[in-house]
Image (tube, rainbow over all chains, first blue to last red; front, side):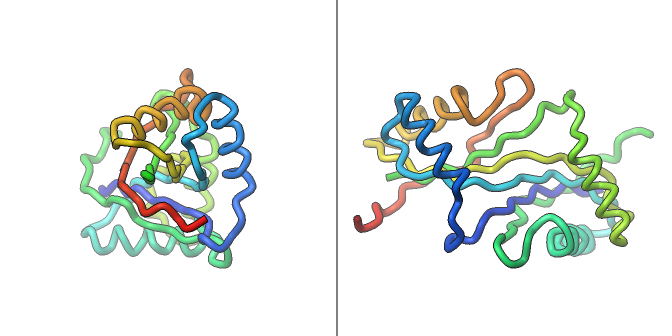
Length: 88
Length: 88
């Protein structure tokens, strides 16, 4: 079993209204040093696989097919580590 | 200027219906080896600060006050790196 950490973010060229709203709110809360905020999604996936390569291929496939919009988003596999299988 | 990467995830004890839905969808798309999916938020923040410690304190404060729900979520600062200030 492998555990993957995946980050999905908007492409830099894509406007991030949610990030702009958070930036304004954080500055209103007394943190004027915050210059910019960009938002994204984070996924932790557990994948049953014979090898790290196979696990990574599955994670990549899940990102390409479902988790990341290929037109506006980029995904990055931040980590992929072997994990004990939890007792059934 | 510093750039911080922040991950906000639901506490392990908290049910993640969105993760369950993604798990089912990914398996339906032909990836039965995916055993579990947990969702979260990702933020990239740019903070003007004299030092990394001050930048981290601001990021931590933004998480505690706005980005992470203290009752159901945990936040982690994944990275904090100095960045060139963009030309105005």
